[in-house]
Length: 251
Image (cartoon, rainbow, N blue to C red; front, side, top):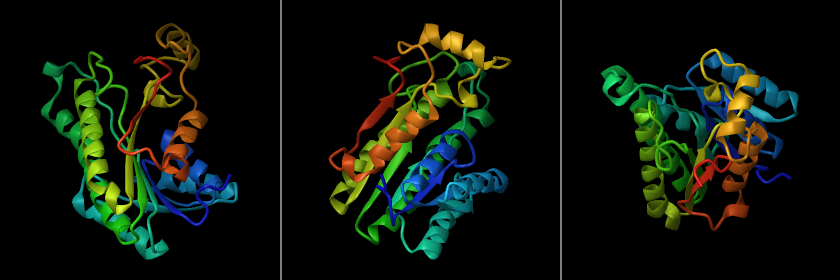
């Protein structure tokens, strides 16, 4: 399928893991992908992988917790490509500590990296999409937060729950302007974030077999397929939805 032929797609946090897989997935279906993140080197590696498959991608470096960087990111995309059709706000940070042990700096970093970054990105993405009267935004939250509480993940869960609330409110505010906004809340997937310190992949597999109803972590292909559907015209009647993709762990 070439569901995104002729479209310009932004993926934040595109230098590794799910963001890299999403960048490759959109490019395979015809999109020109702007791969965004703080560090240029991993973003350039993503672009090389996209181009090796015959796709098109460009790098945009930005610290999305900074208003000027978020504005510049979108401005660069408009300057290079003339439009922005789809934005996937995947960038985020992870913090683990009990509530009373969370340092002030870690709290601020978690809120800024997960909530402020999405807010500033979305604010500028919406402005760009209003120029053409259409667009799709998919924001990454998590099963931890709005759907599940996990000891040690109070800051992270609070931040991701805020992403869900912000996104669903924005969905109502902008759908009549042709901008469709939804949320994806993934559970454990095949990324370093799902690994415990010192854990091997075999250890993780054994743990997930016990913990998750489906008995395994999700694959990058599975989360990519989910996001591509949500961003495509096939999901055109899906607005303000929080799509949980977690192997049944919050059922």
